[in-house]
Amino acid sequence: MKQSVLDLQNKINDVLGGRVVSSNIALDELTIELKPDDAIDAFTMLRDDLGFEQLIDLCGIDYLDFGQANWETMKAANTGFSRGVFDFAVEEDEEAKNQERRFAVVYHLLSIQNNIRLRVKVFPESTQLPTVDSVIQIWSCANWFEREAFDLFGILFNNHPDLRRILTDYGFVGHPLRKDFPLTGHVEMRYDAEKGRVVYEPVSIENRVNVPRVIREDASPKV
Image (cartoon, rainbow, N blue to C red; front, side, top):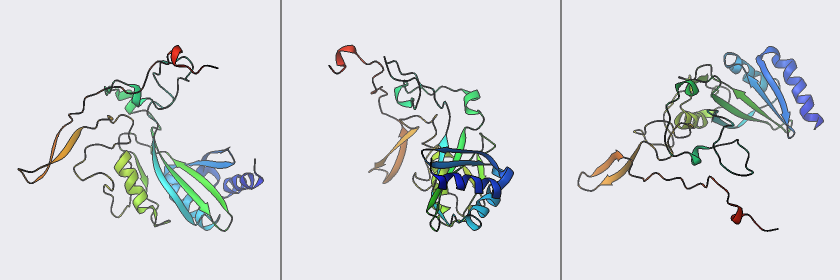
């Protein structure tokens, strides 16, 4: 474990104090979690007091059914992303949708002067309306990053000057990177020559599972 990462962990604990919910080192990288209400003050301290002058990336995470799967194999672990092996049936599980700490916003910070990186997680308090404060006032480059997280995950950012979709079109329904969003989508669009415009229609894609559920013995490599 790098001494520079241990020193950074100690400095952050000293500067941020109780604002840090958790602090973990893995693969020589430090990840901390901040309370949503304290995030802006903590980020300002990270920039001004600890030299993290650059925001490298900001993204959303959906932990719905994290670590669960229905793979039916001989050796594969029963964990991981499993949406591709379901029969494309979206089950209405309100308890799962309302699970605590379902969504998270992850910030990747870089200190050029100290040549060190930091990963920060903030979990919105609400699952139905996940909301965190915008960090544009601290790092202006967060503008499009936050719009992307809003578009794909439905995470809202308080005080964002122009929070609107950036990758999907304005008529898109839902947020495509949420784990309960169907792989086929809700609607499809095409250009109608007679109407002279784009039209939306129900999805016509035939549902099929193209991920094998079972590893056959005769398909295993021979040693």
